[in-house]
Amino acid sequence: MLKIAYHPIYKHPLPEGHRFPMIKYELLPKQLIHEGTCEEENFFEPEPAESEQILRAHHRDYFERLTRLELKPSEVRKTGFPLSAELVEREITIAGGTIKGTEYARDHGIAMNIAGGTHHAYRGHGEAFCLLNDQAIAAYELLEKQQAKKILIIDLDVHQGNGTAEIFAGEERVFTFSMHGKNNYPFRKEKSDLDIPLEDGTDDGTYLRILENHLGQLIEKVKPGFIFYLCGVDVITGDKLGKLGLSLQGCKERDAMVLNSCLSHGIPVQCSMGGGYSPEIKTIVEAHANTFRLARELYF
Image (cartoon, rainbow, N blue to C red):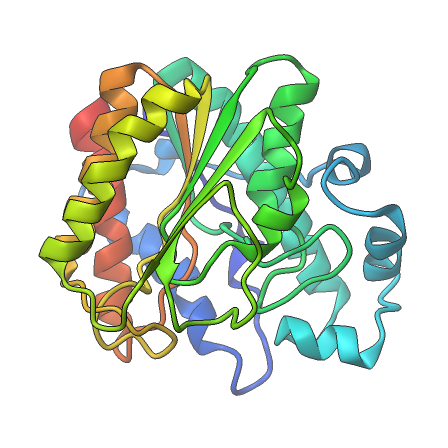
């Protein structure tokens, strides 16, 4: 059965001006149930990640100041969100959902998190709507429990996974792959194990050809025992925070390429949704829903 992490806290209300990116977390589960792709039993409410799990990926000083709401104003501005206890709890719960998802993925081949993909969170600070790096936290949990010797992180959000790259710099057990807009945030990129910067307006054909040329070779080279997939839909043309030119169908074909590769190689995969900021919420929900539809079609 497809298992999906979702908690009511995911739709945490924010002050006016910050709400739009959050609406999808409420609408996406409703859409999946309405259309019959999922049923209530597909969803599970995750428990918050434990402090010791988080501290493998984040500095203690940062995490303790974050939970005490003692970040400096400049640090809070970097995150893009007003800091609150509810927001911190949300991030800790999202990380717990990704950790639990790795268990379901090892049992069923794949698991999803309605939220997550917080790849701009560094070891010692947050950025760009990301306070804690859910997939990095979950990757370290797998390594700690010796449930994977080698991990591949496939980050196809339109923005480079700078926080993920920094967290795993020098960590030979985790290979970070980021394919992103060359001229998008962050403007000072970190160094992933493999970065593929794309020109503005990159279309379906070009994008999919580049991805196909690298993906199979990468899996053969890394030989991962587990894959984390960050499947942001901000690659779609017209996205307010992206500059690429993929269509909805092209984005779906991207997801199909990644999931088919995981499936054909027998490698479990955990998917976190990442970004999506198209002008119309229906476009965001449809693009994300396609990922869940593919997961059900291919695996179950």
